[in-house]
Image (cartoon, rainbow, N blue to C red):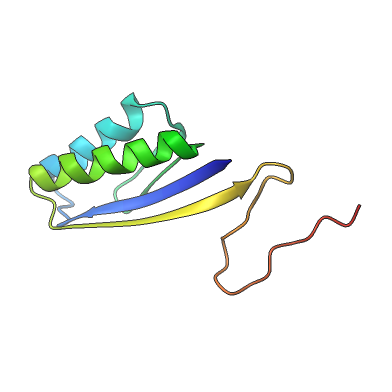
Length: 99
């Protein structure tokens, strides 16, 4: 199973990235996650269940230790067969395979 992780850390500082944001970037860029996209308002990465769970644990421990006061995250299961995100619309039914 593949998962997509989306997360932000706070407090924000648009002038200079705070240490917790730099640590979060380090966690996702230097781990085993793929499709890493780091930005000022949110970050995404994909990987196996094990890789995402390990990254989330590391992310929480390390960012809180250096000053994050809030870590918001969302994890979606990715349907590798169709390339769609099985959890992208809350409350919407996922497309069914009509074979």
